[in-house]
Structure formats: C-alpha cells, structure tokens
Image (cartoon, rainbow, N blue to C red; front, top):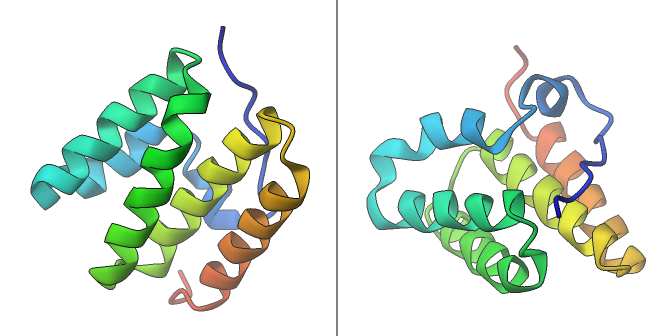
Amino acid sequence: ASTSVLAVDSTYAAQQTSPSDLNRELAAQGDAGMDLRQTFDMINEGDILNALPRLTASIADFAARDAAPEQMAVLYKYRGDVRANLGKLNDARSDYGAALRELENAEPV
C-alpha cells in the first residue's frame, strides 16, 4: 500500500513533487542523505509507521546542519503527509505550518 501525498500550498513544494527531487540535493550529504533515501523508500513501500521516527530524526539532523529552508520545508511536508495518513491530524497541521514558515525564510526564486 502506498500513502497519498497532500499538497503544501507553495511554489517550491509544488516543484518538489517527489522524494527523488530532494534526494538529488542530498546525495552529497553522506550518511544523512542515505538514511533519508531509505526513509523515502519506506514511505513509497507503505511502511509509514516505521518511517515516521526516521523522518523526525532526519529533520533534527538537517536542522542541526543548518539545511536550506527549502530542504527543511520538504522534510516537514513529507512528515506531515505521513502523520496525516496515520490520522495524526494535529501533528500533520503543525508540520505543514512549519513547512510554510521555512518557505517564508527561503530566498526568492
């Protein structure tokens, strides 16, 4: 089973339609990028319950590295999608809000 993907109302997130788009940007980031790619694979395979703590760890790791706001927005968006699919709607709403706040901090395109 696969998860549905809920849209975040932003130009950047609309351009970043799949985890593979983010993967290209993260490819040079070593173990953290590999862990994230494995997490996205889990999501694509429908293993969202086990993917959730991995996404949370990735968000903390990338925040500690001062990742670009666009990258953080995508991570929050995907965690929001997972939480929404698990029925954790308040947590999902919080993640979508965090994604939008990150986009507000992004450099204009």
